[in-house]
Length: 417
Image (cartoon, rainbow, N blue to C red; front, side, top):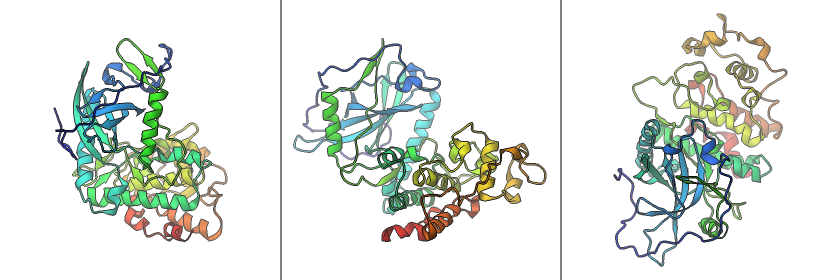
């Protein structure tokens, strides 16, 4: 069954022949070694479609190599065979989702959101800062049906590029990245009315600086095939996601991964538990209603990872606890206002009747937002802290919107750096 989709070309009368899979010998890994998706919690091999290199998915896309995997899917680079022989290869990234009920429902919801994102307002500047779906279809596997979501291939996430730059970004580079991310968030919030809910370094990817990167990667796969493990019913391949250091500036950063995203203007009050531990907004920890500004909080927390090369809150990387996380936030931002605590269903787990944190022994010693920034000085540091504070506000309604943040003096200073 072919799902409603965004199509760019007909499959009729295209004459390009399919490439063949390399005959070079691949390294076989021990059968008792857990690799890739096998390491995921609650791994069930029958839930994953057994993709084979060289296989043509959806009658159109020939699989070149594996890009990655996750709890709910595997991701593959493939070549679109709907090309005339004189045209350059066109590559796509295909997310092949699990076949169990919960993941199929999540895939359907994600596809619906992605179709809306693609068409809400194509003229908006932030539309190009969000990765959208090019196509979608369903395939039948040995143990059920799997949805396939087709995207443009991107380069690598923020954290990987960060490792190439000494573990942190320069202020001028960071400001340029944030311009793109904020334009993307403004598009999602103001035009699409979508809350991402899982914004982190893994989910912001740079675009490719040149298509030749993929040509070289496909050639390298043919000459040096990915290591793999062969079992009775499938072959599990190691992912090939490192494109090497950029030879020219990489493409535009784009917000990706909308499997946790929700509509922000629905009738229901949003109170569910979202976000990863180290970036979780305080209203989520306290079980208070949340909205678009949880994404703004996420971005504010990410700033330290990108600029300092370390998280803002130590509790996020050690033995995490919600009590310890709140204690650090109080040390950095001051106590939460009564107005927020009055909304919080979980306030009595953490605070006494006077609004004081019950777990006073968890307060860090001599901790402040100013002390947490060591790579900036003087006016530059003051402007950065004002920018960060406008996102890291206890009250969700006090955080600036993405549109407002795009006008911040610190962010626009990158034009003069």
